[in-house]
Length: 535
Image (tube, rainbow, N blue to C red):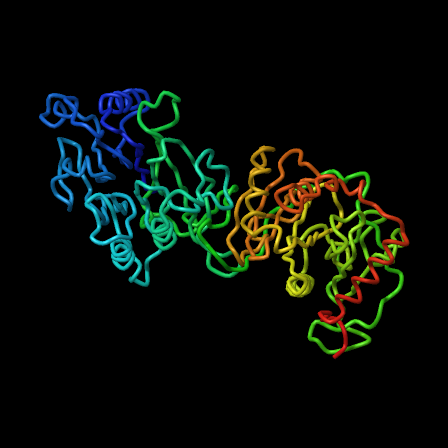
């Protein structure tokens, strides 16, 4: 017989509005039946004493549900919690304590951490420290059979929770929230994580707690931030859900992944192959920006092992284009004079109508639509080209920015644009992309350094991503329309290269003779860095 789920309510900052909260709970229970528990995160008390609370404290007013609350987040309300280890505040209202684990009679396991983050000693009475987080981690994770917890309650949001996920609205999760809470959530793997304090509602897409194809499947985590009770904007402050305790669930049912699951927002590294169902590719752009012809080989190629061979090992055959492709190496449709270097699996070509004379593209020799679809050997050589180009441009006093737009294009074009070190910093470039994205209502997500695009984009999915010289990446999942020249427009802006008139490649074309001259010059300059040459 299946275990009957527990019916729970979670609430954001009450801030002393007890009547509003409990009247709302009564209305919900009258309509939908009784719930087992109410869990409150954020500021339970207001900053000033209230006669309303006295009525609940003395029993004049009754609380309609067993309620568990977190402790103070500021000095003003510390006095409301007389026992730091937890106590009953009123009939049916229990303060859980500063930190710990609450296990119900059903086996439901709730981990709680009261207060806000503090890295200073002594730690204020309304804060938690790295030691508090470490002791919670040790308490739970030291047993080999530990798989995670059912619920995690914190008042602050975890920092970076928005990575890879849906928009968190006005809250910038790169700047706000607690890194200690992020660390705790990473280790405890809660099935539900509730937080507050930001006066807004945010239900993040569920995220996975394992690396696909490298680790055994684990349950997903749902993060929900709740608004303040009775807010005038009517943002959601009460969340109803049902849950069967983890220890009573069938293992296969527990690890079943939701269809909209994302990569873990706190994971900073780890390779992961995407294994999702293909989505139809977007409509092809009628006119391409770059033109190449590769009927002839330019010098001998070297195998990926570094040894020279006239017959290098053949890679797995890539998919064939549906028609003529401007970028496939063997295509008769293109002009060869822009090609400046050829490897085993990839080649470099000058951009037609480039932002600068040394604006180049990394392209796969075979037909691949995007980085996500590349085979392992092609990915390896793409990375070699990236590293080599960074060294090359650094020697010339420049840093390079890479971007890919997998939208209205058939063949992967990894744009590499050098930016003089003297003109701006990496942070300036990053801020320029984020600012212009916000102005155009484009949601750019920051991806941790060393992460893989394959972790968050499936083959066939439309996207745009930028890679900075530090390895940081910004990612946008294209759902509708997307400005085709967005990457160029940002880099051509006054904040970066200050050449706004060159944002459209069509306005930057030069004669074939000049293109040949630029290609010859690039080949000569690049030769000392060329890893494809024989030793």
